Length: 106
Image (cartoon, rainbow, N blue to C red; front, top):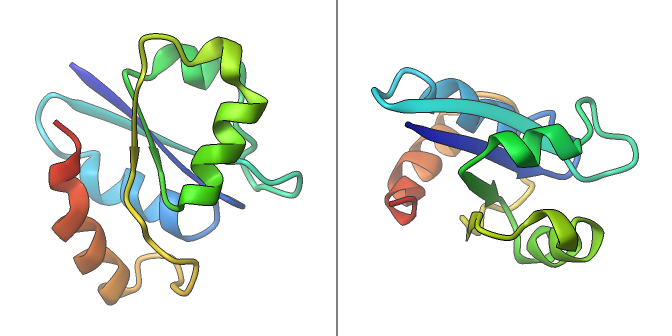
């Protein structure tokens, strides 16, 4: 079972969209969180512990994740999808972009 935690800045658009569209995949469980102080669902240690894969949307979020949670990341597969913060929740272009980049998770 893959437990995929999608992470963006505020957990409002990109990571909740990814968690929703990939949740139906067999063998996958998904969740979403944000790294920002004003995130709707702030990233918690428990989520990192639960996840087998951590998927960030931007390289700067990858750097922040590593700084903020460095002691919790051992053994985790971390992937950056390079999805800019220019979309709204479930925007068709965002869904298409996420689907085209999900192959990076393997």
